[in-house]
Length: 361
View (tube, rainbow, N blue to C red):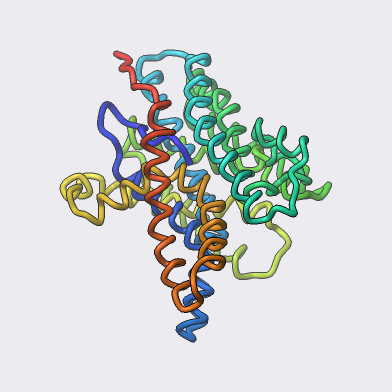
């Protein structure tokens, strides 16, 4: 959900920003209850199904993008046959995640106090959120801000990524991916046998293989792009698609496996959008692409802040606007919130994004 400056060489990947825009706006659409609202006012119940993209499938897309971008930003070390510089790597991750995260946390606390003054935040809850540990607890999983649990999972992915890099660096890309598959299979098997809560369902080890498939695609795309055209990958995606359909439409109790395929199903769409990078560059001055890319760039801020901003928008509209004017205020807020988060990107995120340094092979 982060890293807006991931590049190959010095060229920013517009396709990644488009994909981030899709994921962020889907979550934003869902949390605005847009599908239900459209169904209510049009009488067309089909609109209710449009919420499912943001409800179920957008965060998995973010996870795949994250794996892709983290690895592509470190391809330069693989090219130069260098070990991953851990101190620099972790410093970049912390600076990239925590400044906007802490601002968003403060914003959520302030808005919650205004809109829900009866709900008090305990010191433990606050401490857990300050260190972004909420995704690992049942009690504080989604208390202050509904979406912040995913940041805990992202941080865990970042923490263990050097293990994937090490196996990739010492052995091969296939061995690295097989290693993560083994870890995920063991983790999923354990929780399937013992049972699981929400934090255990979304345990980083359960999802590690799917996340690292993003890293696998980045490695192939940059170093061996021709490999992805081999028939074996089409067969593998067909298997993924069949499993995805079965898990979605046949009743089962396999949610912990379902989460894997919600990530993996995005691999082909991601590669398709990435294959259109040249076209996107040619049309980058189109206002549609400019707006989508801008939302993609600011998608981390939009993701972090949209929940409390929606809450304060609805609170102010219903408290201060006359009834006949409230729909206008609600709709206006939908456009204002991405603008606010764009400024968050410019003035809170961007100053902490370090300049890329080039590693010569």
